[in-house]
Amino acid sequence: MEMSAVLYQELNFVCINPRQQQGPGQMQALVLGFQPSRVLNLKAMHDTNVSAVISESSKQRVPHVLSVAGSDSGAGAGIQADLKTCAARGVYCSTVVTAVTAQNTVGVQGVNIVPERFVSEQLKSVLSDMHVTVVKTGMLPTVGIVEVLYDSLKQFPVQALVVDPVMVSTSGDVLAGPSILDIFREQLLPMADIVTPNLKEASALLGGIKLQTVSDMRSAAKSIHEMGPRNVLVKGGDLPAASDAVDIFFDGLEFFELRSLRIQTQNSHGTGCTLASCIAAELAKGSQMLPAVRAAKHYVETALDYSKDIHIGNGLQGPFDHLCKLKTNVQNSSRLQRFDPDDLLLYAVTDSKMNSKWGRSITDAVKAAIEGGATIVQLREKDTETSNFLEEARKCLEVCRSHGVPMLINDRVDIALACDADGVHVGQSDMPAHVARSLLGPKKIIGVSCKTREHAHQAWVDGADYIGSGGVYSTNTKANNSTIGLDGLKTVCLASKLPVVAIGGIGLSNAGSVAEIGLENLKGVAVVSALFDRECIRSEARKLHTLVSQTMKTSAVTC
Ligand SMILES: Nc1ncnc2c1ncn2[C@@H]1O[C@H](COP(=O)(O)OP(=O)(O)O)[C@@H](O)[C@H]1O
Ligand SMILES: Cc1ncc(COP(=O)(O)O)c(N)n1
Ligand SMILES: [Mg+2]
Image 1 (spheres, helix red, strand yellow):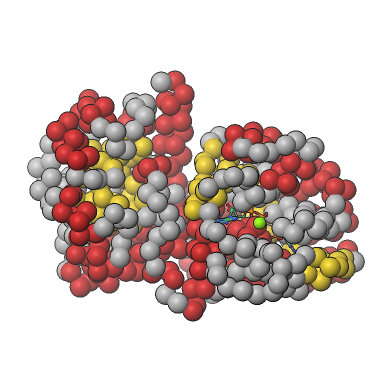
Image 2: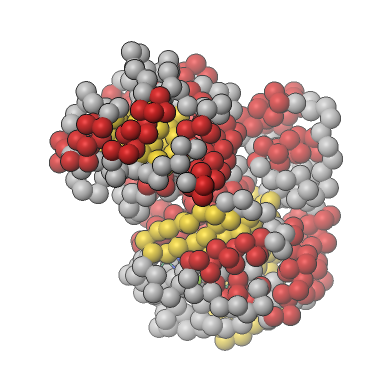
């Protein structure tokens, strides 16, 4: 069973229709992290026929999102935004139109609701034939339409359901009235893998309470989670006086505060639809939930930034350009976000020997690590020739950028400069951090390996952004590396104000002990073999992410 799970995952989710592949479908659902109860109708897997799974791979089914939403004639939001988002993310998108709106940059001038029997007919046409991976919902204007959707999903189960509970447009026009709230709470939310209300929608779901602060958003996410969805994202695009765009993600156990720069623009019509369809697209490609949400937030930020000055229409709510990446080399432009110490939580460090041992490219390994939950990546390629390294670094950077994950280069400042990586990590015998800083400039991230108080102090003086401290335990990825143990790690943490990531021999068996030392500036663990010397990088990353984030949270409370 375990073996099949591993093999199935490495096939990159080719078999995506659980109705036709009940055994492997169940397996895939588990690997993707969706609870079997959500993947309706699936039978327990007793005897996975691995060869059948492999032959399925030759069919090359594409990841497919079905958008069940309203049409926006101005094409900034609704079905049109979903189609463009999925296209931009390389995912097929089919559509079931629930309403046709006459809408522009001024507001919504009219709404024509599609009769529920015809919504049902559209759902049947698509779901009975087209191997949908993920359903994303937007404007669901009547109780009857929610009912037919619920029935269709029971009849034709999919791997995940993303619910954007659209009620009011950015312009303030009502798209679905309060009459749908009960059925949302009772039927749709308990079935959802994630629900993504904005402030007004979260307030409506909770009976009209006021939501004005990030702390209110946390309480709202918790209360909405009690209605049954597996994950909740309360979006803070409309948070008053917020300098960052802050969203709160809650998976029932942990809260994550997802921040990005707030782009100064009027062209923010359709951000919610775009965010939800991008989450759906990333899930359809095999991503875990939190990395999918992070990637979607980064995509919205990048597209808003690219489109901040475009001018379409005379109203206050302009559309933005979802396909900006096709027009310029936006994906290779610099990261927008500042360095966030919380990015150190699960720090993946690559190793060329391990990748060749398992027959993987660096890019595939990095992609799997990110999809499993790695929050920052360092390319540490000691045996790769410079030209190959640069080529791979460019490919990896594309993957990292599209997920909003920072990518650093170990030691090689030249490679970091040549590919415009987000920064470097230097050891005590590499280029001094202050020299790297003067070459890379103030915006890049610089990390320094430190074993002692003195190293930590020097890193601060040199203008480093974080410290990598270790080896905490012994490791065979670094020859002649002395270990400092948990005590040495504590000494370094206490000696510095810089955020610290622990490194050296850390894996599932001991990451918990590291994370529970409970010092405020210990922000995460860096792992090499525990990810890249494993058959299934994605599932190892997922397990490590859960372990480290939960342990850190508990220790932070008790300290
Ligand atoms: N000006 C902005 N700059 C950057 N991100 C933004 C901006 N406005 C909204 N967002 C982000 O867009 C996403 C959609 O949020 P929001 O606008 O609140 O939803 P909705 O469109 O449903 O009202 C969220 O991730 C939010 O943080
Ligand atoms: C058909 C349709 N669906 C959804 C929205 C919400 O988008 P926004 O909140 O950005 O106005 C919209 N305006 N129109
Ligand atoms: Mg908005």
